[in-house]
Length: 361
Image (cartoon, rainbow, N blue to C red; front, side):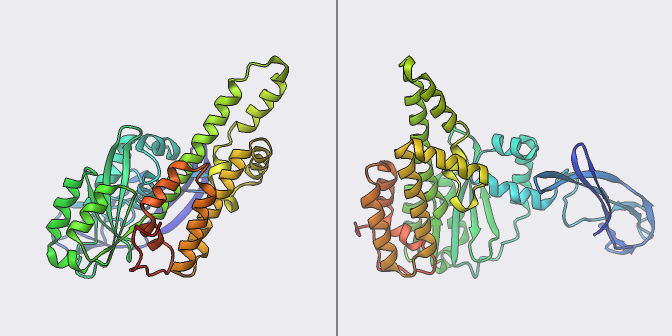
């Protein structure tokens, strides 16, 4: 593609682009044509740049075929026909949906819920990983369609290539069973590893259909459990402060509420990714709320186990020590980690843990 101009407008950054190719292939007869019929310019939403929305003013030219005597529009590999967004924006939003739901992701990206539904459908139709003969590592993830209503669809990914294999309409065991059995016994027997969220029906199905495959607990979902419990404590601290009725402590109450105001991401984000403002907020939280201080530091400690463990023994010892220190504040998370101990250990980088099982603790 050739960028002809870039400007900033009220809607964001607008880049004018058109193809460098002087010819296009007729979709009817397959012959090339260099006879420009007319220009068609339209706006396409792309990935943001430095926090600003980006729009591509695309010239999708129309050529006339000498053979068919009919006009046709050129194919553009970065945007599908009749779509107002790029393919890479759709792929990025699909990744965001793994951590959120359609409503919130649509608001964050200034796209409609209907557009996101179409993105999911488009990606499902354009899935390129059709050859499963070399599939060794399978990822099973989920996308929340509606927050709080347990309305999910499942996503199957080749972990070695990063390519989508399938998007299922539902996240049920029955839907997944139908898809997996459709691959055939030969494909299922060659799969060595399956990464899943912390959902027991998935684990049971993998053990049934792929008994030789190792089940690995997706790191994101383990950290999500820990972050959820940390956020629950943040909300509990806020409720406790709001419930204070001592008028003499009114100033202290207001000061503590101010500390907790917009504190969520200062607590939940990876500490090295915090902005300077968020770092200051985090320090204020730690000074005023000892439980949140302890939980945030333990959250960071657990996250670093994934990044620093060099062998299975070190990983097991680190997580066991973390459990001993954390059981009083991370009650739910500790129980989950104990239940999925072997699968969590297998997710540590570069570790081969075939001898580990869930009876380690």
